[in-house]
Length: 534
Image (cartoon, rainbow, N blue to C red; front, top):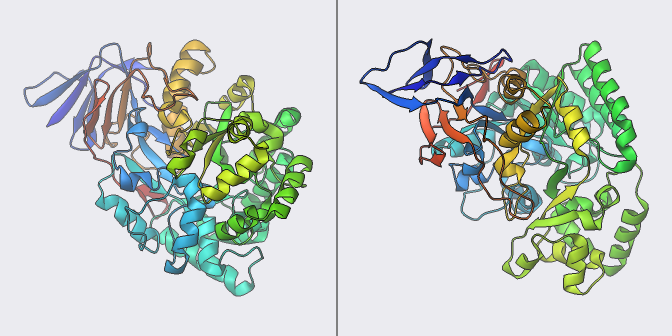
C-alpha cells in the first residue's frame, strides 16, 4: 500500500531550511513531494507538528553479532537510525579462517560479544553478509573489512611485521573483501593485532581500497598524549595511498592534552588544503566505551587472548603491568592515566558470578572484592577471559560542541550492545536533536539533520539515501522537534528515547507512534563499482 505522510515539515538533509509538504511513499521509494491529496488506496501518516527527515545513518556501529541474534536491532531503529556501518576498529566477524575461530572469538568478545547461537564457519565477508541477509535485518547494514581480520588470515596473531609475501596476501584479501561488497577498510591501532602494524602495511592495503573509492576508517594510534603524531601518520597514509580518511569517534582524551585541540584542528585543515579527503564521526557524550582489556599495556596482548590470560595469571607479570600503567609507555594510550580508576566503569561480563561488577568503577570493584583495584580488575579480566566492557570519562561538553560544529563531522553511536551499555547505544541521535539543537543551540535543526543523513551518505557514497528526494529510497525518520531527547543514563542506559514517532526503512513502517511494529525491511548495502547500493 502507498503511504502518504501529511502535514509535516520536511528537513531534507541538505542543510536547506525546512518546508511544509506531503511525502508519498510507493513501495521502497519516495514517489512524490508536494501538495498531494489523500486517496483511498493510501495509508495516511499524520506528521502535523513533526519533522520529516531522512533516516539517520550511524557510521560507527557495533551491531556486528547482534544483528544476527536480534535482527531488528531495536536500540538503533528506535532512535531513528535506518542504516549502520559495521566492521569497525579493525576487529569484527569477517574474514575468519576456520583455524582462528576460537582465539578470534575471545579477542572479539569484549567489543562485539560472543555467542554459540550462530554458525561461525562463514569464512569471509561474502559468507557473513549472506548471513545478515538471511536473517532479514531490521535496518540497512554496511560493512568495513577489518584490518585485524585481514592480518590474522595472512600472517596469524604474532607481533611482527609482514614479509613481502604476507603483505601481498593482505592486499589480495583486501581486494577480495572489497569485491564482496565491503565499503572500505577499518583499523583500530590500539587493538591487537592491528597495533602491531607500521604505516607501510596500512598504506599498501589502502591503495587497494582507493581503487574502489572506498573509505579508510581509523581508530587512530593515539587520542591522547601522542595524538598529533598519530594524526600525522593517518594523514601520511591518506597522502601516499590516495584513500579517503575517516577518523572514528574523534576526540582528545585527558585533561593534560586538551591544549592540543587547536593543533588537532590545524592538522585537519592542512590535510584538506593538500587535497586529502578527511572526515570524522563523533558521539555526543563526554565518556567513551570499549573493552576493558585496553587498560593493559600493549605487551600483555602479544599473541592474542590466550596469551593475555596466561600473563594475567602470573603475579610477577601483574606487578610489571601495574608499573607500566602507573608510569606509562611512550606512544601508548593509557586509559587509566587520562580517565582514572574511579572514572572507568564495568559495563558487561559473560559469567553470572561477576554480574555484581557491572556498573562499578574499578575503584569500587576493588572495595567490593576487598582487594587493590588493579588486582580486582586483573582477576575480573582473567575470570571473564577478557570479555569485559567498560565506559570511561575523558572530556568536556565544550570540546564535544567544538568538534560537533566542524564541517568534517557526522554523528555516530559507537555503542557496544552487551550488558549495561553506554547510553549512546539508545540515544546518540535524539540527544543531538534535543540537547545540542533545542536546548544548547550549538547547531541548527537543519545542520544537525545534515550531519546525521546526507553528510554520511555522501562520505560513504550511499546512493539514493540521506536526502528526502523523489526517487530516493524511503528511509525516513519522523520526529517531534519539541520533545525529542535521549532518556538513557549511565546508571540506567537501556531506555528508548522520546520524540521519535515514525521510522520507515525502504518504505516499511518500522516505528509507528513511537512503538516498534516488528517490521524488518532492511537490506545489506554493498560497494558495487564506486557506489554503495542495495
